[in-house]
Length: 273
Image (cartoon, rainbow, N blue to C red; front, side, top):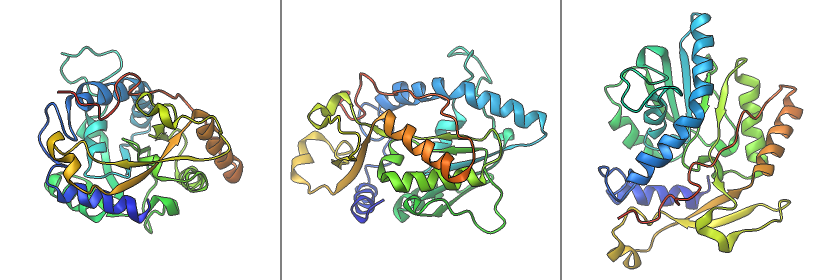
């Protein structure tokens, strides 16, 4: 993440709006809770279920690593994913229970977000957060065991240039055990809401200047100087290239299990009021 991106998140946290309650607007608005998180869970659940079954057979618990964890939202997303065959009302239907987890670690560059995460989960078991710059790859601490799930959410991977992404994937490939899962989340190059930025030149990276404006009420957005957050718009072919390059560099077979769009018709920050 660039310094500009770091400053943008610090401003968002400092606004007091970045951890507001759920509702029609804000970080945890209904578009996110009842559409994006549900879609993400529905696509990820089958792969997580197979991994959980495998680890149970091996007598092991899951180790979860949240890449660009922010205020710890990835933990909530992972722990509330429902089994692929469950109904909305079924009890005990989540893929992962607390008893399945050996450890959850969140890594983020922004200290303000990490402080928010630490407060949020200060009484939680086997949860820790630490500072790290994913643009420099993934450096585990001395003696730290590898993880089973390398998870990212809400555009985290769009902070990385192509070579940075290849390095991150390469580091994961070298560390991860067989059958581990990587979940990457990017801003799509052909997102419906930014048609003026569509570009078919896949040999050049496509970036946009983004502002975390949705957390502010509409009547004051134009009165605030909101920090710019550079984000990369990603096409499937660019992801495929990065995975192939990381496989080539490490000699580890990486397979793309599935690609999906979690907000095909509803942009993340279209006003839901």
